[in-house]
Length: 398
Image (cartoon, one colour):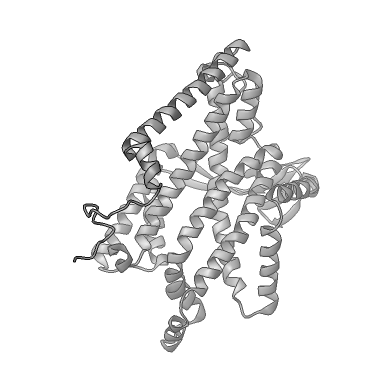
């Protein structure tokens, strides 16, 4: 008698797991039950939506997004795109979204750099350094981010006035009006004209140099050098000249360069130092996942500790680090919404102001949800692409 298997549904003794047989007979076939459930769910959602629309109309509110074309009549403290109070609500929300993307991007980049350095220092043989990093990680991971933002806000607002600003270097000043840094000035065609071709040319140059001329993968430093050389050559060929504008202290203020207001400096500092603590632990665990045999083999070849870490250990640890880093980037992007607590005009802050002035609260919340969902799905998709590129070949076959 052949042995009955769960995969063979044609056997007479087969019993599908799940509900008891009496319940399945009462509910009927699974497709029918699922269809009925979806129809009931659609009716419930339609009824809830109808009640919301009726309530809004009774309050004198017209549901919809037509308000996006109306004049906003409120100012935004800082914006990367041109905006004034005479612009529409849609323009105001776009300005807030750009501010959110700007903070999330630079926060992820700087938190990654700091987190990698802290993660490597955590494994240092220096007891003082490793203990300091451990204490840093424990403090920043076990205190609320909102509390940390309030602390950074108090620190930046307690800095001296521009006349007595703290000078970290000849071109870096800290004052209660913000952080002043050097700025690159481009003379010639607009960056919107030469930046996309420069990025495309850099990518093509990397692909050709890696697969054609050299016939093998290059070290990351050499690949970076090729990308930077091509990226610089394209605007130079287009007649773009680059100069550096340094901030200069004079009178009652600091002029020149680029300035970060106390609000954006507070938000960036809070997000970077908080996320770097989590990234440091991710890097530490990824490095420790590499077997000791790799270290011993590298030492036997005469490699220095720095070369071992950069060329052998970290490339293997990336396969463990990358999936966890994705979660850290998503958390940082979502945590940027706490900017409303310190007065930075991000998407949530602008949407709250829009909801208060128009009464379109449901629409404003929908815009916030869709925007953050799109940002997080985009970050996740990019990280998944990178994760597939660094996976082991045998893992890909599986």
